[in-house]
Length: 186
Image (cartoon, rainbow, N blue to C red):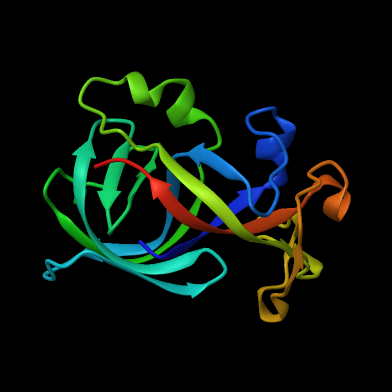
């Protein structure tokens, strides 16, 4: 694994799960993935190609699956705590797009004790930190509710030397950590 770009929402720090991060810091955490689009794959080669920010085009194998969590090996290991889709059984290969983020707390507070759960904790060095500066926009969902979200057409970031989860973007910050793996699961 060369550099890995990992997303981090301010609330994860605000909840007390981690302290603020800084460039040059060594830290440990597991990786969580959020599927954007995944399908069963005929390919049998693990890969993770960065698309932008912390989104990746991946191909990998389901190495663990239960009723409430599943783990992918895409050249690095990442989990999602949710009921796996029907196709996501142990040994199945999948491909598509995912968001990679820092484990908010589910793995280090409990999933790591689940029988059969692989070790997912990595030690990383933070080489770069970026604060998302993409403008917020107001939209309406299909039910007529007002939503505030980022304007994906104007995605932007600026480098910072450390996170300030309580102040950056009025406490609603999203960061990208460029990390280099020091050690991690075998």
